[in-house]
Length: 196
Image 1 (cartoon, rainbow, N blue to C red):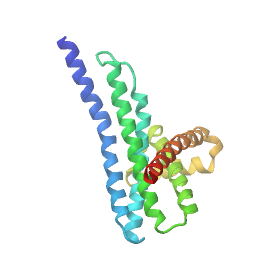
Image 2: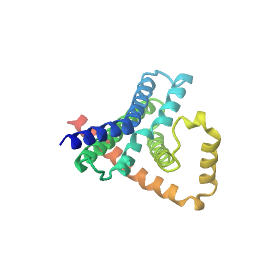
Image 3: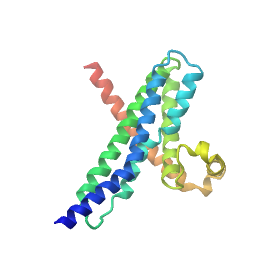
Image 4: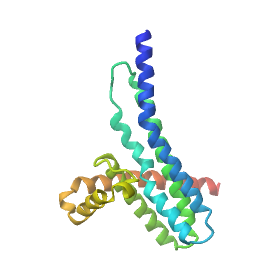
């Protein structure tokens, strides 16, 4: 029994170390989204907050891809993996959705409805592309500062030669559809509740 408890404790610590950085990145999204919403007019500050928010936004739905860590390991109950990975994914989706909802409120002050909706679709697509960059070639949001050459080279090749990078675009389209359905469903439910 003591051996099981030790392994279980080790597993808990391992997952805390694995997931906590990703969960901490959600705070960056929420903090800069909050600062953006508090801006009374579009200016340099608003553009800066908006850029940081958009740069880190993929870290929220990225948590869904942590399902890859859902594997059976000796000494760690399968249900523990399921609960931990599912809760992290849920937190990521909710944080990303709430963040987009509030970004929409900010954009509504300055743009027509049609442009706001197109902007949301663009953000969701860019976000999904960012999730791919993080999960597979393993780029991070801060690579735009610490490793810009490799990051921009990878992005440039995927855009200029899309036929050579089909997996990127298939993933981006499918993930955008998934995230978009979740976002617009939650937004629709939110508006229905407001009317009630």
